[in-house]
Image (cartoon, rainbow, N blue to C red):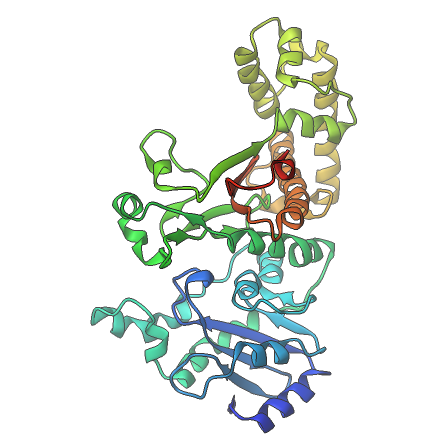
Amino acid sequence: MIKIVENIDEISELMEKLETESSIWYPLWVDNEKHPQNTHISFLLVQTPTERYILSHQHTDSLSLSKSVIEGIINTTGEKWVFQKKKLLQSFQNLREGLNDVDTTHFLKTGETIDYSQQLQQLVAPYLHKGYKEDIIQSIPILKIAEAVEPQFLKCTNQKSKTYNWYNDVFLPTLSDIEQYGIRVDREKFIDRWPQAIRQLSPNSKVFTEYNPFTVTGRPSNRHGGVNYAALNKTDGSRECFVSDGIFLQMDYNAYHPRLIAKLIGFDVPDGNMHQWLADQYGCSVDESKGITFQLLYGGIDDDFRQIPYFNAVADYIDTLWIETQKQGYLQTPHREIPLSWIEQPNAQKVFNYLLQAVETEMNIEVMRKILDYIRGSGINFCLYTYDSFLFDVPTDIDKDLIK
């Protein structure tokens, strides 16, 4: 039996229970296809070891609880496991630290992501057939939805590890914070370029990105509403859809991966232009050197290039890394263990390439956490993170010392 929590006595009873008991939380949004910044929580299913509850915020089948009341229930001290933590953090602004993410444990155990649409397909299909497209959840009886998604609770495994802790405590909250900023668009140009994404536009002409952290290396993909924000075309006018409230400021790294590798192997490189430093050793132009470096680092280091001390050290590191990874059965990064079985047809070079992407991601997250703290309350928007670059929307009247 499911209890729908609607009055003060029921709220107090549940809060007392959740101060000591563990619970699993399953949120559903008014429109699950929209970004959490563009929709609201419909209701949450809560499962304790002995009971099941419904906390409604906007579903039409029950009295609505305010966000502050729901936050108070979530913030009780008992252990909480939540589905879709990254999204939930955007729907509630005052949640305590320490919420545990079910999606992360499921991914680390199975290598797969949770499908949130399959359980609801039979319930949603009749409405889609009639032409309804938005807010369908609100038209389906709340108890039917609860019954349909109940099997999802079996995916909660409660397994923690060092890898899990990094995802849960660092990675997900950082990506969630960036997603909340959004990026302004020229409404007409955006709809003309991506008509399928019209529902993702906010009333004030913003769109929001959605980072998927559950990839083998952890390097997040970034696709939402049919728009791939991680690979916006530079030549077909796609980027002209995005407009600044002030000025766009992009920050990226000089020779990011060559420097990252130097740090990994403990090799000292100059502070200046590393591509120029390598070009001098190749005996070619800087533009040519970039292609050579890319080929060597990602395709394998030829013996002829081992005479360059930097590449000799890299080649030795790749060999050692491969031996250690095979012995351990996983690829060790600073914060994670990536199972070797997740890497298709692994070899020394592929394992090294995966390590590069993984360490790049972990370092970026540390940098972005500092940036988010630095710009908080400044009026600067952190619009987009793409592998080795960060895009900001900076007010024209900003204190210039803030962005030096």
